Image (cartoon, rainbow, N blue to C red; front, side, top):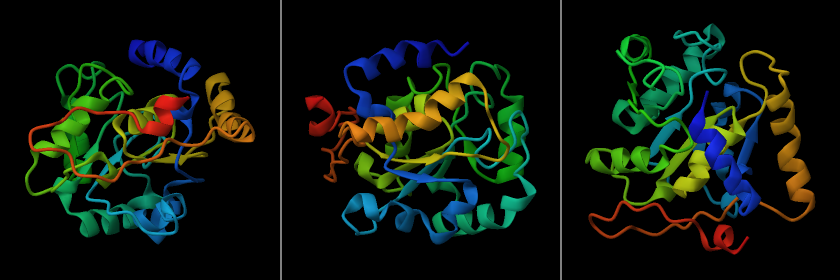
Length: 227
């Protein structure tokens, strides 16, 4: 059970925009045009300055419960890794590297397969947002000075997209994923963004300003706070 998601989902009663993504793609292949290009429309038709990318694993670039990159995405994954370099990429999964992987064996295997660091965390997404952001800021070669330089890619609104929006980062939602998922929660999620947008509820504004040295506090945007 994901207690973090269960507790944080109540935040949507006050701030429903937290589960609205900045960009939506069908599958991982939607990233083939480039991360900044995917987010360009959400950033006033200007490509944002993305310095780090956080990936979910299950049904994002791998089949659920599989630690191999889906064959169809291997070439694209390699292109992204070459474009950003390994330190700028991070995998944050609620399976590998989480409390479900206490000895870290799945995380170690995934790192070997992908060449990308897997974040170790005891609190599952979206509750680990601050820890993920602090980690990215602590890596000097990455150069992240504010959350607007981070993009989060994942297939779940209530974990991946919420984590990104709670962090103040860009959120990219993979709507369909590697395999079709028609469970109840997935069906609820797939219809939610469009319903919220009909009521004028959009993704939180991303504040593109540099944080003060040593300040790693994650703050909600003004738009998000107002809801």
